[in-house]
Amino acid sequence: MDPETVATTRNIVIIGGSYGGVSTAHYLLKHVLPTLPSKDACKVILISASSEAMCRPACPRAMISDAMFRQEKLFVNVPKLFENYSRGSFSFIHGTATRLDHSDRTVTVTLHVGATETIPYHALVIATGASTPSPLLGLNRDAESLRVCWDAFRTALPSAKHIVVAGGGPAGIETAGELGEYLNGRAGWFSRKLINPKVAITVVTSGSKILPVLRPSIAQKAEDFLALVGVTVLKDSRVVAVSPPAAGTDDSLTTKTTVTLDGGETLEADLYIPATGTVPNTSIIPAALLTADGRVDTDPSTLRAVKAGQRVYAIGDVGSHARPAVHNILSSVPVLCANIKRDLLLAAGVDKKDIAEDRIFKEDTRETQLVPIGQSKGVGAAMGFQLPSFLVWLIKGRDYWLWTTGGLWSGSQWSKES
Image (cartoon, rainbow, N blue to C red; front, side):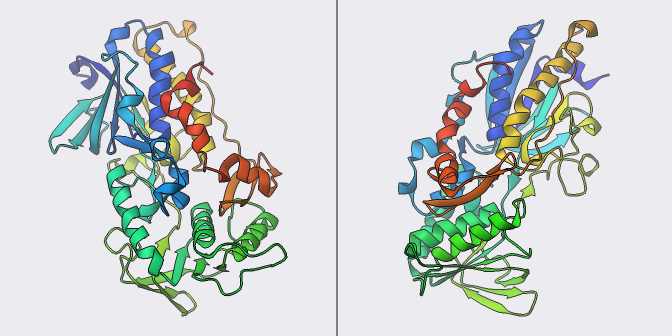
């Protein structure tokens, strides 16, 4: 028997309560469920380990002090975001998905209160995102855990004399820039670097330049801005060992650390922050459904996870369809939901000729990345065009996208079907 016929409710299950998951839930509730032949037959269930969502890009600045951002805008309560929808159409489950069975089409969840629940799905959206090696830089678990980590970091920060940041991507560079300006200030107008900074900050990257997505001239400009706040960059240097081994993670977040580089050099750090990319949150996904880099094998055009069976999809950093970036998530939401709508209508028996064809996602691969360097400078490009420092500050650097999240969290950004 088809496992779907056993279930009495047609659940559209979304795993993950951040940008991709929350946006998908709003879009489905507004534009997909009302179009289905039996409106009461489908229900959106959003599963998240955290009852709060947050503006993750803001972490490099937010981790320094609560005074950096209005906390009620930085963190939002997820269940409250969906209070305006009918109770029968939406349910929030505060818990951690621990098992996906794509044969039985069920998701097992360990609830926040400790119990376990198995939920059958008619359609499934995997929006679990990715974890950062440093717990300071994302919601690796929940908002409460993140705040605990920030508190520990803030307590240790005033006594730090040397901070080492591993990773030359945006997270590492933004973190170094924020810490540099906060702790050291900024060099004067005619200086090329800050002489004798109060706190030495070193960025270590294995690349020949920082910010690999951006052209060399922009990367060099970022390095120049870092020098103005007392940050030194070590290029072509890979961290091969840290002592203690768990330095910079939950267990040894603020421990003094010896950092060993591939050339044999060692750095003594009062604080060590690993910012070497992210790891997709796919521990519950069967290996057969993943690509070599651990992401969900996702059709780059339709966002379906075809190997997982009918009506299974992936969105955001966890999927293989696009480079991890917020703008790619937001541009994929309407495509994903249009294809979910098509699949749900077909499953409901609507004639194929009466349903729109698949909508196609096409990643914009033009050079696009904005990187603030402290609170007043930044580098970047958008759609292939280099942006001046002032525009990077205006668009992102003044509050790390916090000005954009209100409409996204509330669902008003998806008021119109697009």
